[in-house]
Image (cartoon, rainbow, N blue to C red; front, side):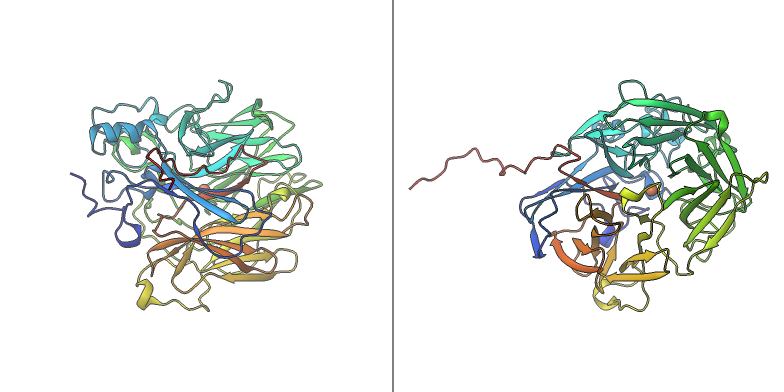
Length: 502
Ligand SMILES: [Fe+2]
């Protein structure tokens, strides 16, 4: 019997949906820019069967992908589960067989996969396109290829056997100068292993380089950052061990005493050339961008001083602190000529932002000006009578000019909660930041999801696509144009019955 009454799946707006959807020709308010020809892909978690424990992480939910296909001012919507072995085995058994977050020792005895932990993946974190293929990503397994038009799951992809790591993070970076994708897997040789394997994949999708590195300690290495000279990795206070997993705990616990390490790997070097810098405890789930200037390397990220995820509790039972979970935009400076293993940190602004940020990807790894991210602007209204009390509210996209300290903000509405946007350049030659933001918002009052398209210079809304139902918030989303993926225009819904002619 399926029962979602308890646990992290939630009720109300966040209640599991348990359906796949197709909408041909969505309702649109405003005018969708005619420059937009592509698809906005969202990947997140959607429980089909209830989680195995009430304190499981939402990151254990089944992978689910959706797309807004936009062309000629028209939008078609589609959503599908990502058909991992876990999803299919659960369906066959008509129940949840798998254990708590990334812990195979807590699975049903009929499912044994501790020596192949990637078989327990839910593939629920991010989409990325490269070499003409679309992938769903989750950092505990290799990518799953997805048909960019039908969203059918095509299966795991190991780049013709040349990607050797068991894992592939959800945050590869594509170098806009070379077109190469830089990607990596941590715990690359199995559960709790300290192997970090890094790969370069050509624009055509071929593995051209491999670097093998050992990390200072096994940590949640969720994101990395790139310059033209370096591949850079943060290691911070989420810790794990086989002992911890055999005790039945979630994969990660937060250890507030662990230092932060940053590893700088020269792209022209080898794994042994990785240089580790050390700083005070902090948390860097996501990065923004980085660039070199001579012997200096600058890394920008939304950084907190403590644990942002209450569902990964402290190893010493310290209560979760919302203050230490706040993120500010910070710049770290690494001096490669220094004999010290330290770095300096500058806080750009004290405003608390969401730990998600985007840049104009044509400037990734290069000097740049604009950060796009989200926040809750408390100066804006929230209609709790219509939208409900106790909901997380992120009501604003912002553009932050790093060179001038200038904020520009877009407010989505007084019953809404925004998710991570993508930046789309107006055209290939447009200056940095000249383009659009696209992203979804939960409309708590009307129990529906809306897609907003915003002018990224003026930060004003251009169009809104209305879905007639709610979608569980994504984890990450990306826009890809019809030049980056072989996109079709949605065919008419099939009809095989008789047609009345007269
Ligand atoms: Fe992420």
